[in-house]
Image 1 (spheres, rainbow, N blue to C red):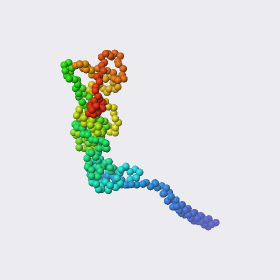
Image 2 (cartoon, rainbow, N blue to C red):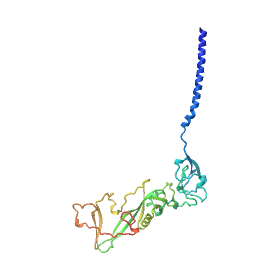
Image 3 (tube, one colour):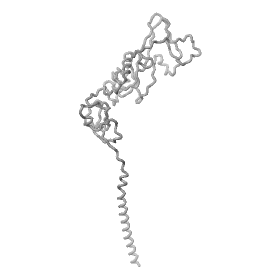
Image 4 (cartoon, helix red, strand yellow):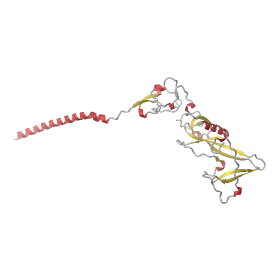
Length: 317
């Protein structure tokens, strides 16, 4: 009886081991059959690639473009920058040298807008956009916003003038007035002194600032520089919207920011006598206690048609 039991236990162990081996082989064979399909399903779809030329080392404004500071990298075709060069030979080829018009950092794509054409010089004229012109404004430490106006900034140009009216005859002293007009708004600074690199970040005191303006605006700036003193107003970075512009007179200083003033000042001349009156602005009613007899309309002024006198915002030059 004992021998029979031992034999049965031994046979059970042998057959169990065989069944385990057979099961392992079966599972391994099934896994091998399905693994290629699973791997293929896990792989992402193929992405079309192209080649883009990027900077291999830092390139600064005015640097010559050489093959040693360029390299070609693989780039997804659907996300390649518009106009990007596909090979170094497209840049370094026949036609002459090229010069950087803007700073290019390592691994940044080299675009046609950032370098000159073949054989062109890296001068300020290459930075001017189509249909625009460049005009230079003489500045000092105050006008140039203490040197904080740098290439790439946006500024407004103001002109301050002083005028004297009246002949100073008997009984009437000449009347002088001062006011400030906005000449142009939101113009791009091309250069500060001899610096045209838009990556410049250190203030520098210069005696001239060159701005990019439309041809008519260039005439206004040139005329304003002769008619009065120019000032630059530095805009906040990213601010491009036009601001409401009007003439600001000397009499408004110290009165706070005017908001919807209900009166305007007019000067009336009767022979040699000249007086100023505060009259309601257009669309405003007369005060209850106003002396109607003393309110005189301003004498109409002849329209000035010349470009040099009517080109300014506000009241004109």
